[in-house]
Image (cartoon, rainbow, N blue to C red; front, side, top):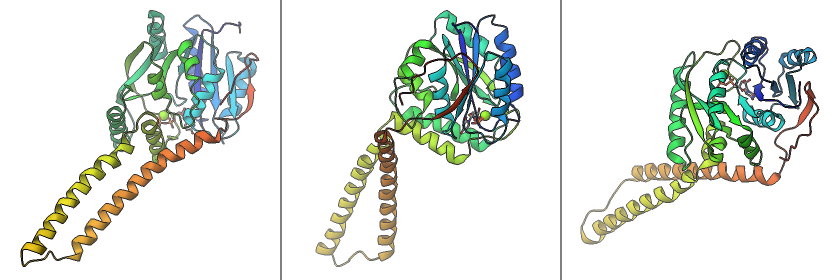
Length: 320
Ligand code: UDP
Ligand code: MG
């Protein structure tokens, strides 16, 4: 492929052998219609199935295919970041490997990019084939995130988006470890444009985002962009101690000025449990932040590349 690559398509994959062939075919077909140069950057995030071998095979005869083979599973957000570090295009598209994000939409993104938008993100107006639980929790998460942060992170928007080279270069300067890429893209700024789409069902295979990972992603999103949870302790603590003080005054008043005393250790236990629970929850929130500070201070690289297949040799700065 010529030295100048117009589009880079980043496709993170983790055990996607059931879909990857079709994904390759569909994206290839769409990108072929642009009549411009492109590269397909598959990032293998430590898959234990055969998807990486399949892509490696493609890279032998299709020079637009590159495989970045990470040394183990580093997680979706890190896989995307690795893709950005290797991307050479003027515009970079991030798309899931399971065809939940229709590749055909990339053409629309490209049009908006040509008009002058540096970020074109795809907003889900409908999600098909996902459980009610996932839809509700996702919807709740995006709204909590919007409430808790000062920068505006668009709701109901995943990582499916096109970013300009300028945006990609700026993102590469952000060294943080527990990454929430879509938030970072908002943080970087530039002219952003939403296009709406209906999210399809996964073509085959199962979601690689079980509840545990969804919680991790949500906490990364919120803690990366807001201190509000930490302030919560201050606010609630203030309200509760004020209420406690007033109640104490009332009890003292009864004891000193009347014949009755307040009885009941049951209420004591109730209050103790509630308050201790509250304190522990706040400690947990504090722990989320402290743990992330710890991750930053260790200064480990964000990911390790085992091997790169296909494409042109290139100097890549993995400063993280
Ligand atoms: N993925 C990844 N590493 C992981 C988990 C997921 O690279 O540890 C990829 C996965 O192969 C897919 C994309 O990230 O291309 C989104 O994952 P998935 O479709 O399972 O998430 P969902 O759409 O269910 O939220
Ligand atoms: Mg999916």
